[in-house]
Length: 307
Image 1 (cartoon, rainbow, N blue to C red):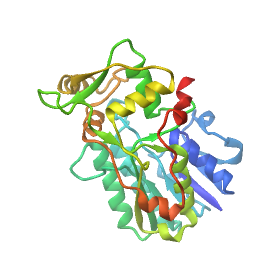
Image 2 (image 1 turned 180 degrees about the horizontal axis):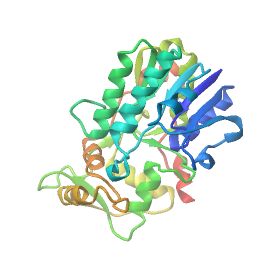
Image 3 (image 1 turned 135 degrees about the horizontal axis):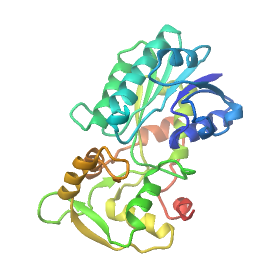
Image 4 (image 1 turned 90 degrees about the vertical axis):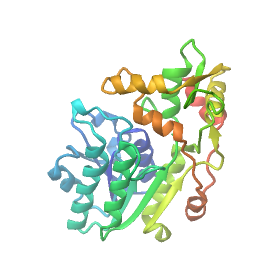
């Protein structure tokens, strides 16, 4: 069985590629020119060099395949470089859905996000619009909405590695963000971290799991962690006991609004808004339908941060 994969060179995509191969599938992957070396197990994949903005490239990937996994996602826009949520999350998915339908590729699995909604950030809105378009198609769809995904990134962008690099390694206390004037709820927003291998197993498991057709799944761990607990767990994984202090988020949001377009600024306004609203979910349906026990968000499972 050959599976078209869009978004195979990133953090989650690299694990989906490996899981596809381990389960006997042939990944057919769209890769941008110059990024071929980012694809893991490339010798066992069928590679199409092209761009998600090019419908001919999409059509080539979606020829002679049995299913589609759309995993393209960005956590930050750089509009001056043409990198936008709309292009990557919605327009790319829409074109793939249309061409899959035209090519009689009936099975379509979409990476969305926990919190996707019409009145959210640009990230959340475009994820929601892609979901809506897929649900309105005639395809047999499955949608996954993960919370925070963690795991060894092998040099790719991943939340815990990025947090360590941008915030925890610097010689200042870690900020416990809060809204307003008084810090009574500093750092109390929570997430449901899920390991990247569990995410990959669900995506690949859905290919032949009839229960998952026309279903939307939340993907998170079986325990929620607030911001303070996340910082403590990450720091302990590489032998540190990081100090933490309350920090009003408003000045950082203002700075983010000014410097969003610069790669060197570590966070965007949208990222701060999504962080502060929390990202928890109940994933019991995914545990039942895919028969797995999620890996814990723990010091032991974060030892890759020692690299």
